[in-house]
Length: 365
Image (cartoon, rainbow, N blue to C red):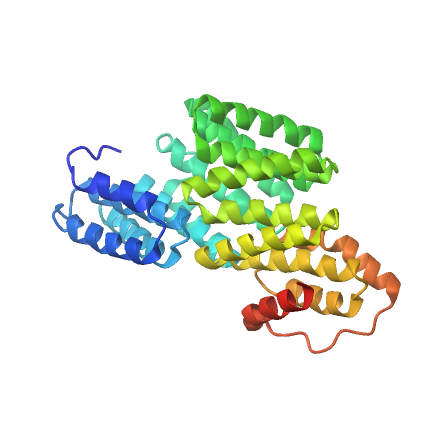
């Protein structure tokens, strides 16, 4: 994207990217929208700016403003018949739905995006690859790992073909993730190491953090807790430097889970509190549920199976919980089943999430 003809907007976008304080970000968005008024309606640069800022805000967890700007970008791209941009905007909106647990909405936006772009477009191959990645992530959230892997592999092929190393690193990372979900750890490690070395070569901090996060996951599954912890700590640091709360939240939750497995409860508390703080800033319901899953395991370790069973029911009945949270809880459910606890009654409704978090923290710590 060539933004050089609009010198005021570029520094503004960089400032939005760096800012942490939500109030400041809101002010900057207003300034951005004002400055956009100076660009003629039919200038394609307008669309690029809307999409760029929409994506930056999405990564910062500012979903409402992100959706609004992407919506405007999609509409302008549709009017101007710029299919690649329209499809990308729809794809990004799908991804915003996905991270908030609205998997059906995500799917319908992806179907729309693919209709706009076509199955195997001659141009806009990079957009096509991104749609494959987003589609793979949505399938992964729904536990459909076969289709998820196919989508990521399509993206990996396209990025390799067009020589986009950053994209290839991302697709390799995703292939590693889905292989981890299917317990194919050797395959997972192969792709994740490829992703890590590509991102180091590109000096791409965001990509490095993502690869480390997922390598930690592989090592955690293999019971190599020291190695896993080192990966997560480094990933959390990189995400924190980038101001990306979602990545940091995942890393801190996993550090909490490792501490729970080692029965180091003070350390788990520390990590879970950071994770909840990040989840609150970025409005990440699935991640809050993941923290609760870890807390349920502490109940099991303390022999409080009734409390654990109630909390697990709450997490699993919540529509935004992830498939991997379900898998994480399987062993705890096994223990509870063997202990023959009383049937679970009075499970709170999903809209009680904040109350459940507060009460659980009080009971455990």
